[in-house]
Amino acid sequence: MVITAYSIIITLFWITVTIYLLVNSKKITYLKNISPIPALAEPSVAVIIAVKDEEKELEQALTSVCNLDYKNLKIFVINDRSTDRTPEILHRIAQAQPALSVITVKDLPNGWLGKNHALYQGYCTSTEEWLLFTDADILYQKQALKKAMNYVQSNGVDHLTALPEITSRSSLFKSVMNTFAVMLELKLRPWKASDPLSNASIGVGAFNLVKRTAYEKAGTHTVISLRPDDDLQLGARIKKAGLQQDVVYGDKEISLEWYTSLHEFIKGLMKNTFSVSNYHLPTVIFIALMTFAVFVIPIPVLLLQGPPGWSMAASILVAQIVLVLFKKGIQGKWWHALMIPFAGSITIYILFKSTCKTLKQGGIYWRDTFYPLDELKKQK
Image (cartoon, rainbow, N blue to C red; front, side):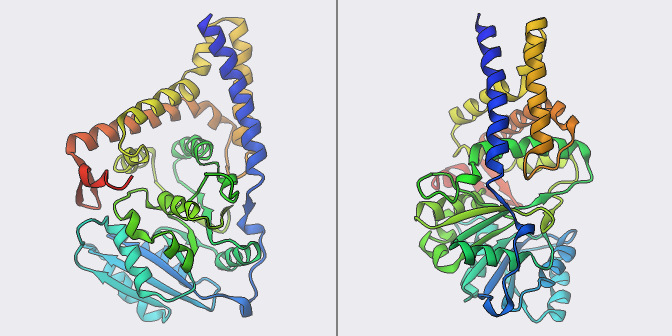
């Protein structure tokens, strides 16, 4: 009886979720479909990029930023204690790009994560009306910033997040990433970020464009100085401050190869996944159980129930295929739906491994610096 009830509920759930995401993702605009702002109407923008040992991706990404078609632009790159060839690359690019300034951080003050401190130093150095916090591996098309500025100006937005197009040479990682994207949108509800009556908020390290006055009203990075998920927390602070927030899909305009393989993806998320639960073990257990029940076991359980279960399993699979093929913001293939149970299992593994690792170490290592858990918990 319990299994039968679960089978009916999970089948209806997946059909409902598919419709829910298909409908709501259509409410989010593609950045590529927005007209560029006229050159005479360009507000001043400071692009702020924190870098530490980024020699592999830095040159190509930074060149794309320097090539942005935007006159009223300054670029601040904060070199946060790099020990590789990053300083040499920055020096060479800065010599050819008058709009680019390099700020070198030699020491990290207590109470700060390196990246958060570096981004804050970029803000302190700049005077521009708008701030674009972005990462050192993001590739921009020339008109991307003009289109984003036209959107915020036309819609009275204080903070705009652009969800980047994720590229990868690994088909396996791409299939898992699409399930991860579905999970993220179910949690964050980005289409509700613009609704002042909703508590939904959004922020992405790849592209956080925020009005200077809004950033200051939200408390700047000083109030999230120890948050590994600083991008999400910045979005939450801005929304909580009563400011206007919105999101666009950045496909064809803003992209990055987040990870080159599934192994790198797992390794990369180990250092900060526990922070998403505010370092609360019962929350981690709840998330893991829900992920297991919703993403991992539905089809296997239904297939074990004979013909009645087979039809429900087929219904779920069809819904999932429709989701990965037609949901806005996902460039999926039909077989990515078959990978959803595997992707759910990977998510649970990352959750528990990250939690156990953090608890065992008594903190996290972030860019070769150790941060005690007791200190991290102070900023929830």
